[in-house]
Length: 124
Length: 107
Image 1: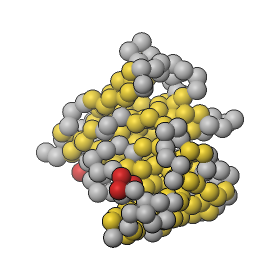
Image 2: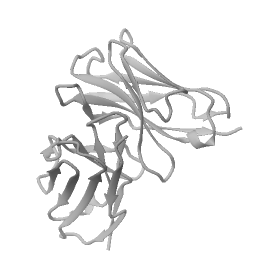
Image 3: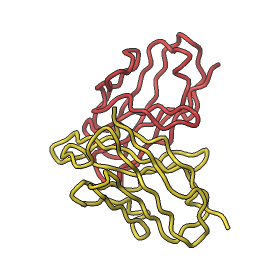
Image 4: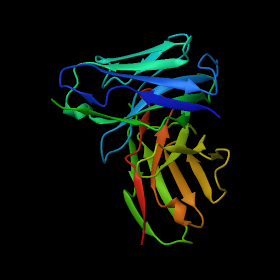
């Protein structure tokens, strides 16, 4: 059974960089059929796609966050990571990592497995 | 970007009821739509993809329909475990986007 687990600091100061890692177990991050994504959810609000990465390193970011986001992959550790710079209180959210299952010929995907999520609070 | 309008935002129903949730797109997305269920304090879970294909393990009382710009999630006979928040998501083009959510509560 595939499992994803987010890890990283639960508290980040304003203007600093949020860093999270997602560890994948029960399957290989190097599979050609999947992308790996980050989605966040501010308290009491809806879901926002942050970005995704393929095992080869190709990345896709939400334009609303693109200037501050970096997603990377470490296939040797079966992990992928998120960095969000210059954070403010508006970045306080539960951050989820998820597996994107390729569903179309042009490699678009929906998210079929999710981590449990980790709350990151931005506060001094 | 594709804008999504999900309605209603709040739905009150009773066990055994049939309910429908709507998701409308600002432009056509073929059938590239997924539905998720989220319970408080938990991650979303995939219910339906390709607008109408049930994810493995999801009860058959859940069904999805639609294509192009208008989509519907139907729960045919509500069970107690179905009271949750539901989201649609388009994966037709970047940036991927989610509907605003529909909270299904007990009447």
